[in-house]
Length: 148
Image 1 (cartoon, rainbow, N blue to C red):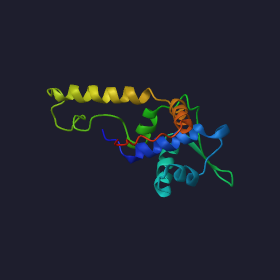
Image 2: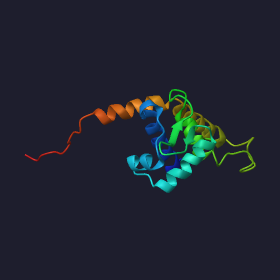
Image 3: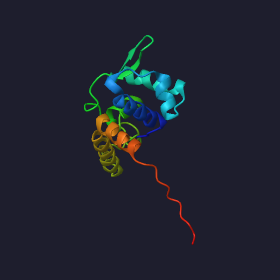
Image 4: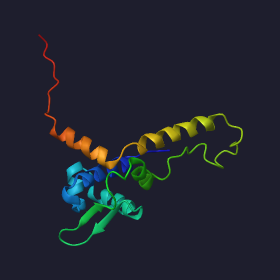
């Protein structure tokens, strides 16, 4: 199990799609610039997310990417697995070491993988977009200290 920038950037881009006005398609460049993601890298991620059925592409001057389903129905788990593959232990994968039936560590990694899957499935794009909107509205605060 390994999470990379693919998951982070893919999740951020889909949060922005979930927050888009009237579910309008957003251009790759607009998504990339809004989050500081390299455009070529984001294009690769969006292609993978399209193949996974999470986004659709629309061509033309007002084209771009949009979610295929409601943001309430799409979880962070779906996004991560579309970009990284299944959340599962890599060391204790079947056939990895030949000790699947006699390894105490297998239960640890199985529980960890289950906990990660449960945590990611608890976050919907709607929830994350609402949290982002709340954070965007919050006033900026300065937390510097003065030495008096």
